[in-house]
Image 1 (cartoon, rainbow over the protein chains, first blue to last red):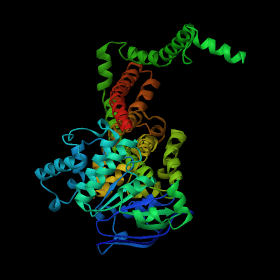
Image 2 (tube, chains in turn cyan, blue):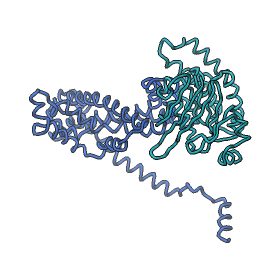
Image 3 (cartoon, chains in turn brown, purple):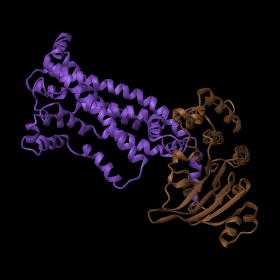
Image 4 (cartoon, rainbow over the protein chains, first blue to last red):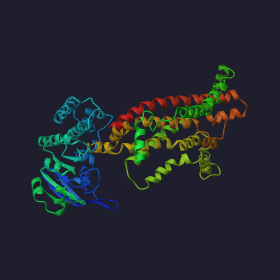
Length: 239
Length: 294
C-alpha cells in the first residue's frame, strides 16, 4: 500500500517543471516536499491529485495505476493554499460536499452526514461553526474547514499545497501541530508541500528536497537535516 | 533644503486640502454639466415619447396598442426574444466556461470571435443573412425548394437577433469566471464531483447574479434590435414587423400617436429591465464584495 513515484516528468511549454522525480512513501507516511519556488513541488503534488497530467513516468499507489485515474475517482483529499472553499455554502455544506456528490448507493444518509460534520468539526477544533459562511471565518479557521472537507471523503491520500502559506506565524504553528495530530489519528498517507524548511522538518517524518524538477535528497527528516548530501541542500537548509 | 522645509510647513497648515478635493465652483460646474447633459440627451427625449404617446389621451394610446398590427409586432418581438435569449444564455455560458476554466489552442481567437457582433454594424450582419439565405444567396434556392423560409420570416428575425445579442452573456461572464479562478472547481473534482455536479453546485451558484444581469441586458437588446432585423424582416405588416420596425412604419405613415404609443411600450419594457438591473446590481455588489472578502 505504499506510494511509488517513478521518474515523473512534466513540461509547461518549453519549461520542464518536473524532470524525472522519484520517491517512495510508506503507507501512512508523512512526506514533506521542500524546495524553492520553481522547483516543481506543487506540480508534483497536483499530478498526484489528478489536477495536472504527467508527460512521463508512473505512480503506483495501493496497487493502482494512479496516473490513469481521473481526479474524481482517486479519492485523494486536496488542501489548497488559498483554501478554495465554496463561498456560497455554509461550513457544514462545504464539509458535506464530497459525501453528497457520491452516487446514490454509496451516499451516507443525511443523519450520518450531520454526524460526520460534527465529528470533523470537533477534530479540527471548530465545534459549532456549521452555519457560518467562509467569508465569516479567519484564515486559520478557513484552512481548518478545508482540512475537514478533505478528510470527510475518508481519503486514501492527503495532499496539502502550502496550506499555511497565507497565515501568520502563530497560526501556522498551531495548525502545524494540529495537522500532525490529525495525521496520526487518521493514519492517511500525507504529502505536504512547503518552501519553509523549518515547517517541513517540524511536521513530517520524511523530507524530499527538490531542485529543478528533481528530488535532490530524500530521507528521514533528521537524516536530511544532519547530513545534507549536496551543496544545494546544505545551502538551502542553512538559508 | 528650503523647498523641503517649505512643503513641510505647508503640510502642517490647517488650510491643507486632501489631494482628491476640488474647489466648490468646479464641483458645481461639473455636476450641473453632467445633470444638464443627462436631462437634455436622455430624460427629455424619454419624457417626450410618453407625452406624444398620451397626447390624445389614454384611450387613443390604448387603441393604438390593441390595434391588431401593433399586437402582432409585440407578439413577434417577444417571441424572437424568447427564443434568442435562452439560446444565447446557453451559448454564452458554454463559451465563458470553456474560456475561463480550460486552456486550449485558439482561445484568443475565440474571444475575438465572440466580440465580432459588437464591432460589426447590425445592418451588415443582417445583410450576411441575406447573402446566405436569400434567393440570390448560397442556400436560399435549395431551402425554398424544400419550402423552408428563413428570410422575411420568424427564423431570419431570430437568427439576426441571436447574432447581434450573442456577446452579452459571454462578455459579462468571462471576466467574472476568470476572476473566480479554477480553485473551487479543482476542489470539487478532488472531492469526487462529476463535471455536471461541479457546474451545477459550484460554478453556477458563483455566477448566478452576473448571469441574471447579462440575461436582462441581452433581453433588452433583443427587444430593441432594429438594424439587423430590419434587413431580414421584409417589413410585412402584422407578420414580420417587430416593435422597433413597427414604430418606424407608423411614424413614416404620419401616425404619430400610434408610433409613440408603441415606442412608449418599448420604452416601458426597457425601464422595467433597467429597474431590475439596478435591483440586481445592488444585490450583486453585495455578493461580489463578500466573494472578494474571501
